[in-house]
Length: 273
Image 1 (cartoon, rainbow, N blue to C red):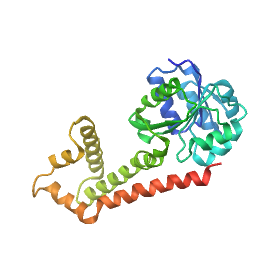
Image 2: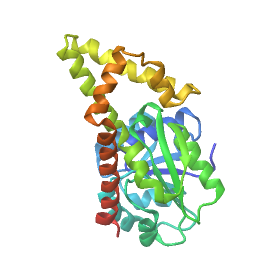
Image 3: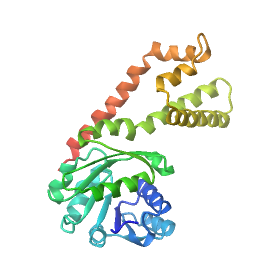
Image 4: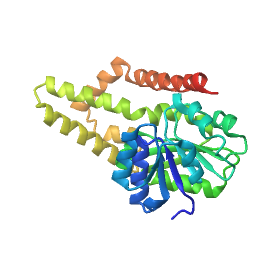
């Protein structure tokens, strides 16, 4: 159980996932968690679902808490920081999950003495299977790092990285679920074209991805070895994989990841105060 009050600025899907994970893990009791949002329906939902206190004013939330989690869109960051800067002190910990917004952009407005942790989570956090990468500035003490790790471990797993790696992590882990869902969609569409019922195709594809992911996570074998284990010489898997090679799948995947990486950098340039 943490000592400090915890507040979420932004009450969208990721905030709800984090609040749910925190409460399930008993890291905080609901009376020590607050949220603010410009949308009244969002505040009503988190209040009714989790029983937490809500505020319409971001500055009021900051005045009532010590740990402030910025669960807002990158394009809204500057406006929110300007709104809360007079209420933030070096006794606060600020945690940001906004893609593309570097720590220096946050401290430029809030002050260079403010402890800031930057985190890149992903959407599987909605079902407590997320992956989050954590970076922080020199003002962050170990106690704060442990708090952030506990919060984000409540919705999946975490790694601690140098902030300069955040753009590639955004591309691989942050955007990754979207890439995987698109591949899944294509597999379902292929199965339907070959005669499968749509519902059966979805079930087969989803469970195949679940099973393959779990096997990759639990096995001591490398991804290459696992691929080889299911690829019999002159068999069906080999035939399909050969199409991947002929069509340049490796290059396609790299180009997609690189495009997401470049876009993350562009967002920083567009929004950084």
